[in-house]
Image 1 (spheres, helix red, strand yellow):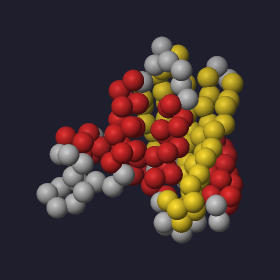
Image 2 (tube, rainbow, N blue to C red):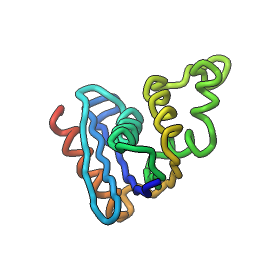
Image 3 (cartoon, helix red, strand yellow):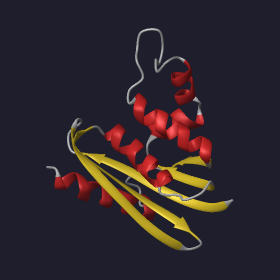
Image 4 (cartoon, rainbow, N blue to C red):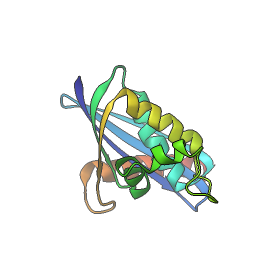
Length: 145
């Protein structure tokens, strides 16, 4: 399998509010940038959208090293929360529905197609790719402000 690095970030002005996401895909030293946004969304939806869109851009199953500053995304994947929510019909527990079930469903499908290792990076701490993804996300969010 091809080894790909993916860096992602989401941004939202207000929560909810106008939002954007950015992603960098790197394979064999070649980078591709992706970004998008929505007029009325949340930060978590944008974080998820960044990962989903980056994985959807891959044309074949890959070994992916994913870097995100979203603890929501990283913990839900690394600690198995998202799979538990799906197994419990998108409930976090007996009383609380899991948020963004359609995005989590798509992300879990993509994670089953690829071999994904999830790495958390501290946001706004000088990580070059994370900072670039943040700029892409903010620029998209500003289109809807």
